[in-house]
Image (cartoon, rainbow over all chains, first blue to last red; front, side, top):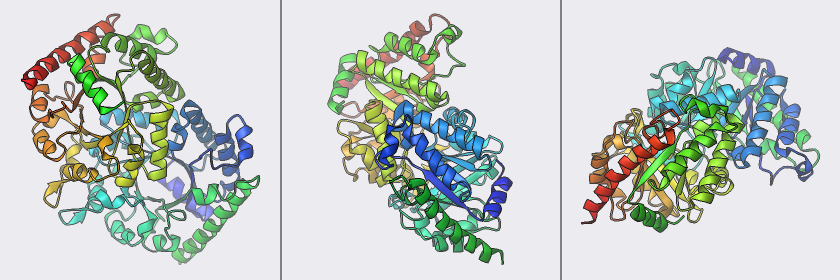
Length: 274
Length: 274
């Protein structure tokens, strides 16, 4: 998917919501556990109920790997389902990969070609040659960790290298990498004040923003500083939406939560366009 | 496996060799491609031919994920085979994972419990709460990237934060994390001169050293500065061993290459003990 297609979808749906499909068998409605593939059935119901309210789905690979081959199968079925039934949706493999060049190429192949995701999240620690193999794929997007939403973000990411914090150094440096136009960045919502600084470095890049809801971030604050001229934000919510209920009405309740966020986004976008 | 069991194995075999099982279908002997699971058959032959010469096997997960569910199945069969037939061998899932707390717990479950690896590699960018869920597992080991062997290591890892480089900061900080005795570190062999500095910070920790051979590192230099009182080194070779030949004699040739390294290690260990 091209960036322009993503932007069109945002304008059409008046939403920049990403829904995180982090499916934990201990948290889904118990009646699903009797089915052959509870994870896929759960995702399918959530997707059917919310696809018109969001522009992206983001399965976190950890939740699938934890169930071994069965989990990988559920992941494969989920991405196939989205790509076939809702091809306009932007898909994110939240995998946080990164390795030496030939190994990163294998990961890129796994997520972009074998599974057919539009994008994958990566970690920057190993530098340029660990990320460029992902960037080489046309119309695929590589979403690199910049400033994460967890407490541990302060261990290294905000430490100063010379006159600027590590995460700013990561943003700045990555702009010089080959095919850097295929880069997006993860920026946690728990630190809305940081968006102002980040937009000075990457004014137009898309930012994937976790941490709205369960992790305490505020949507309005994020948008105030984070919106770019092409919107440039994908705001993720996982648990707050998918676990809104664990009864028979789980998909309906998830859609209700997604709708609340979408309406907030619509209002923000309408104000922003003026 | 306890650290003491790993050390005993090293002393017994007079080897601290780790063999990287990074299996690429385009590089293995073509006659294996006719079999039902070529990756597993390749690994099995390599393992049977080399298990007495090495103390650890390290499959890199990227090479398995690239083949989807079939690849994950090959990984599962490989680790099962090692654990059953050669339980004394230390196993490393080279996965370079790391995410927010509840997600890292899922990865830890995947590699330690579901697959049954002794250890997993992780990336430090997200800090303490992304690593501690791995450290919580008793007699399991978490191998964190410190200084990697690729060119991109110089993008961020060697940048100075205050009076010391980021990778030293990572080493120093991680010593204060809960269950940090379960930490080992990845230190690339291409920079043998760095080992002296690293041993000042983590005198006793095990270091997993990639980059001997294909990536240009020198075993003697690494050992000169890197050996600790309990040896404390696992030196990895992947391509240099497993792709020594791509004919019918591939396992035999791999064993020959492994033997060469083991003999070098034996000599180093004997000198070191004096």
